[in-house]
Length: 247
Image (tube, rainbow, N blue to C red; front, top):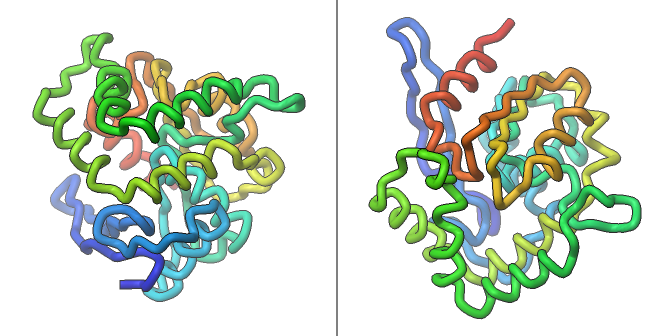
């Protein structure tokens, strides 16, 4: 374990075909999963630095960073703070980028009153808040086949996370402005986003992010919500594999 940072959960081979393999690292950010649960460090800079500690501790090079939701924002901040010397490619999946909160110079963002109301509802009754988000998270109203058991499993994962970590991380990610640094990304980038994403609306996030990163490859899934890693698993895996193996 990296104290106060990430626990490397496992190394495992992914074998899409008999003659290809990709070694993967699954990780837990601080306050999540089996990592430590400190009271501080849930800002974007510390999240990026935690990722840097893990990469350097394992001496990883030519890595392909794949981040979902806040994970995509962490990748972007990692590149801004630590550069791309060890990074070959990045994939931003349903990423909360470039800047979520509406301001005078960010009219495309989500009005602050809506963000604050959502966070207040989460603070007041997190299980209820999650239950109300479940359908929208997977966009099951659009015909996506996600079982009740899978929905329940995802909710249990969320509820097992430190409430303090969730509260602080959510507030930090929606208030962080990445607009100045996204155009500086030089590594090949894949952006994948669902058109029905309720958590990170596509006009606020995915479409803008793809335009800001030079040469980004953009895939938009018309019927996907925020949880497309479940609802569109096969399509996402195919797109990630094609991106990883592209020359």
